[in-house]
Length: 414
Ligand SMILES: Cc1cc2nc3c(=O)[nH]c(=O)nc-3n(C[C@H](O)[C@H](O)[C@H](O)COP(=O)(O)OP(=O)(O)OC[C@H]3O[C@@H](n4cnc5c(N)ncnc54)[C@H](O)[C@@H]3O)c2cc1C
Image 1: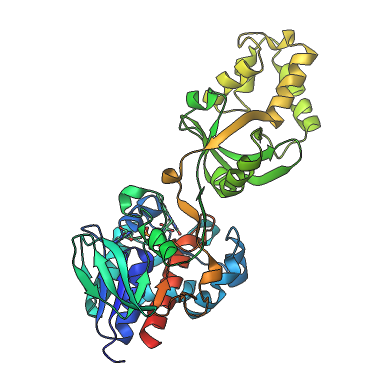
Image 2 (image 1 turned 30 degrees about the vertical axis):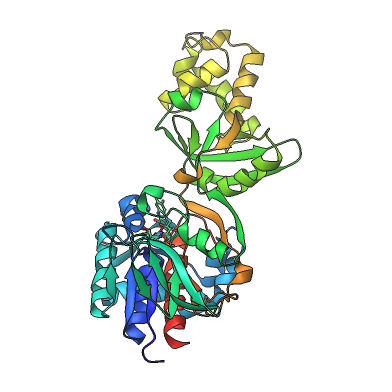
């Protein structure tokens, strides 16, 4: 048993942590990575700052997963946010907790996270093989025997941890080979869909507003039968539609919803803190104070300038029209527009632009206490290739680190 060879495939957050933990417990651990560097996606994370985890409590943490969060309870009990933070801080990397309990390195640089992981791999004598692409797995009598690389080389293995990621941002290396191999070996794959992804709209005005962020707004997504309310937060206009935290957080639900229904629209409430009556009173006050002012100048106090031009255009009011000439009907349509500026959602951006892949290896085929396949002894899974995904805020990386840690420990001890 002492000569057990453990091979980890995928040098992302899950694979590096799996190899480190296995290396702490055993000799003879190898990490295979197709890129010439480790952690290519990790380097991009948090806009290059790496929001590595979230400091909230376990129950709140699990609620941030779109479904299936309960599956992670064992992995989190083994290695959770405080353990991860201690891991980096004990190795000299100071961390800080920002708004909404998001945790970042004090350096504001994701490469400092990757550096710590690389040093730890070295310290634990993990052999890292770069530019090596897993092509297939060798099995004998339903037991793991080794790994075939694309260049024809064979890497013997007794335990194999697949941590090859999802299928988004494919240029980082996550192109779904791990999923294909797991499927070939009989594992069920929950259909892959984009998560944390921007949405496209039928109307073109978002393009005119590209780059504009609206703060403290509320979104209401609807079709003829159903509504989803976003709560209050930020919206970003893009060249094709909408993005930003509120949109990304709800996008997984919208993607699934779009499969059954193609008439989803979103209403932007630009003034969620005011009722229609309060808005009316406010407009009437402004109109009374400056009856000769052009409507475009009056609205400036209520809207960002870039949005104001588009807003008046949608309301079909001439921007230079004097406030005293605005009819009651026009005033009411402005009020309605403040409370519900509508955009029709046509589709999401493609999965390659999603921050996370929804779907993956079915949890029914993985033992949550060990991350071992229920079908093949000695085969383990970790990270985004599992059917797990969460909101933004550090939840996805913690899931990758925690499942990696558990898979590494289980492979070393079982
Ligand atoms: C732009 C962006 C920003 C993000 N920011 C955050 C954030 O701030 N906080 C957060 O919690 N989450 C964030 N995420 C999500 C998070 O980065 C991922 O969920 C996480 O990196 C998944 O880790 P992983 O190890 O499972 O997969 P990956 O990081 O994708 O690693 C998989 C690795 O396997 C390698 N590989 C794949 N196939 C093979 C093969 N056949 N042979 C050899 N190697 C192979 C790949 O090259 C890759 O290095 C972000 C995602 C994106 C795209």
